[in-house]
Length: 465
Ligand code: H79
Image 1: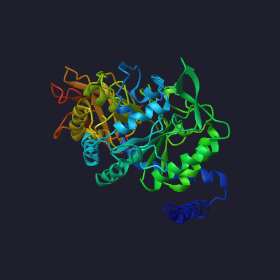
Image 2 (image 1 turned 180 degrees about the horizontal axis):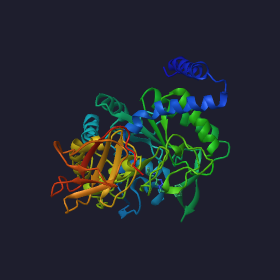
Image 3 (image 1 turned 90 degrees about the vertical axis):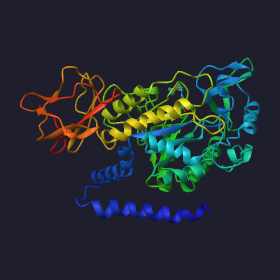
Image 4 (image 1 turned 30 degrees about the vertical axis):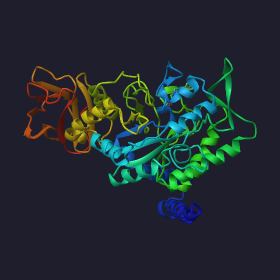
């Protein structure tokens, strides 16, 4: 069944090559031409992702069963790392599988919660570092074959996403604490420290082939739109491996988007690839937002509390205000915001997450226009953040001035008007005669999280100087 799709993929590939060779080259300068063509095709491939700006990350797997606790002890650190943080041997960790029975899982409800929050895509852990698969893998260590639930999770989620016009995407860990090809590098009191793994000599090719079998299934049967790699840091995984895998993936699906962690050159948690290393399609700052705008594509992934996978005792929730302002901050610097949910083992989202998703959705339902399909701002004022698109500048005011006036640097564009996104019918007066544009604003903020003023202009906003 899998083999059947090959000819279509090959044909697409040939067509793409033909377009490059015959369609676009007219000047005979092959190198420049190929680069232009590949920039065009990258732009086309990245278009939905650049417009989306906001996605849901989901970390779910066997680690939701212990939920941060092992043998009566609370284990420090992120919940999905419990296997290494508590030094749990493989056969012990496997015992969580018969306890994983998420009978309350409802794919439609999950997709709807993402949709309502204003998220345009979902990235879910198909396999985290612990090696357990949330899809029906060829092996036995997955939700269908190893749990009492005995049903697939990702198929219905992929279908629900399609129904709600959400792009279904998958996370995949290269490092695998469960796979026989990999062993712990160290032991602590005779117990394994799983991170990072070392590869058993002679096993890398086998493992890579098994990984490719998984990835082919995710692409062909589960229709993943993004492959979000992680766990790329063990020494045995190289940039060249990443590059080879990337080419293979894009042959399978020329529309696929792949993060930079497919290579091995990530510069720590700041998430961008070091100069000269293979960077995939986008950078991946983790738990941080770059200080300034960045011109290449990037996505900040962040948690709502301090863990990705559910932990019963992590109550350190960020406020809805912080989460919305993070989304705005990221958009104002030209990036995407991937906000995490760690569902419980019964298949439900933690209540605190549901409440925050609702709050974000309330803000987005009024102001989403200032986030989607916008570009990095020209400046970052003291009172908040700015995004822009052709014909509009969006001022996100965090600290509402009591003076009744808001100033922005003058634009070179012709001014067409200004209004709050929450009250588009009420024009705000703008004095555009000086070096600053001065907007007359109401006495109080419409939204304490961020009130958005849309300034309509002719063309793409540009500073006067
Ligand atoms: O899936 C979530 C976490 O489980 C996972 N990534 C998010 C999306 C995660 N991986 N690592 N960490 C969290 C923290 C560990 C960072 C380190 Fe490293 C790994 C320090 C040294 C190796 C990353 C790679 C930072 C430097 C090199």
